[in-house]
Image (cartoon, rainbow, N blue to C red):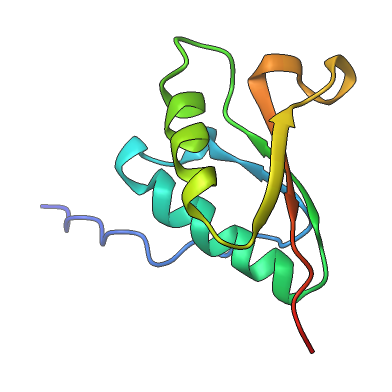
Length: 98
């Protein structure tokens, strides 16, 4: 008899200005995006690429609905073709105040 696997613990993400949402459950996306953007801002990373994929657009819609609600987001736009086109969103964050 094998023992059931333990649920995975928290996932450590590299805070490097690029967040790929493909590995997250849709229910977790809002929290992941919010926390990741805050961590980037704390580190002085003010330009962030969120990769949501092209697919049917569910993740893109979720991200685009969330961004206007975040006070630290200065602006956002679809990525250029070399950065993922409509499969990614570029977010510009406001600098943290000293």
